[in-house]
Image 1 (tube, rainbow, N blue to C red):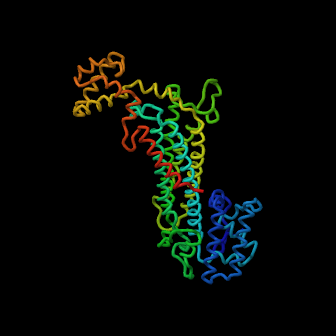
Image 2: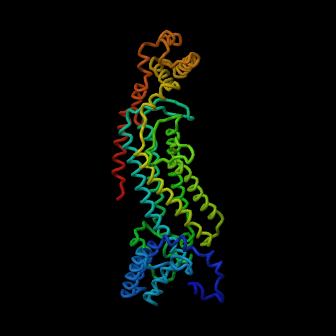
Image 3: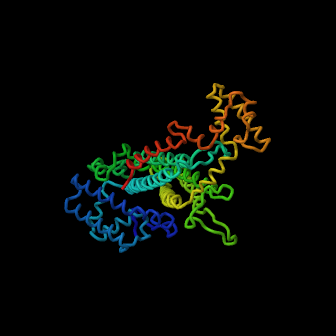
Length: 462
């Protein structure tokens, strides 16, 4: 069976070479985008008088027929044709003969595959953004239920200051919003048409690349035909954005794993989103969160794979670039499944509010409030910090909390302490005192929730 390029060769490749060379096992995923691009190309060729109206109509109708038959499972790809482009072209030629061979005028598989990947990535960026909005919406709904749920805030994984669970969740809201916006920016560089670059030098045929871009919804065309077929920056950038999403997912899941542990008991995962042990009957393992955490490394690997493939390639197209699709497809599929399952797990988990509050009473989370109290009395912050530190040291020696320290002992450190210090250092008062925009008080969090509800509404994708 002769390949599209076989006329120059006197021998067919060995089967092992054909199998090694073939990309059909993974690029068949692009069939709908390959057909979409071919239809747009046919329309442009017709506008330019390169195809007749009758030929164009025949080609487009047949391509739509092929798409329907593939979707219905009536057509099977042939592995002897090395890629999806060749398979679609063979289907077309088998159905309409010589007219089908005219479709490849003014294009190469080099710019064709670049187009297919861009069309695929445009669609998948929107799919991932839709999932990000769903994740943000889930978190905002959880925030609304937990604006007064007090918990420890941490630095260095040590209890630091009292905050609310709503405020903590809000940090991830902002991360996922940035992920959404980062994909918006990535989309701008994906949304450039490479078709018309041909193999690398462009074409002598009178084509209209801007027309093709208009038909396919691209913002513009690549301005250098060599770059058009050899650029994979847009995939690297997309993989980078996906890797950052996975970083945020992994950080969140790490906390879920900690919170679900016996040592924390801040949350309890629903039985439908946990698993057990084959030997230890009591176990309830956070496998979903652990798998998301684990899959993060997989997406990082996809990014590094393509960086390594591209790092030393001379211009223009090289067969190495066939290795761009598998890591991209894997990263996209991995991010999507993680974003699909995370909101479901969050919506069903139980928040142990009492355990969170109890944890606030240990670890001197109100030591900073003591220092802030002194600052309000005119004490320089560095001196206030020292006084509060001395009080903590005293408490540790007596195995008591700052609430247990007598007013007499407070006054030994600074005579300006009054009975109101005990109100100042209550966890709920500590939280509510922080009213600046972006802080942890109920009022401050609710202000941000309102802002983010508008963001959700503005960015919902149907």
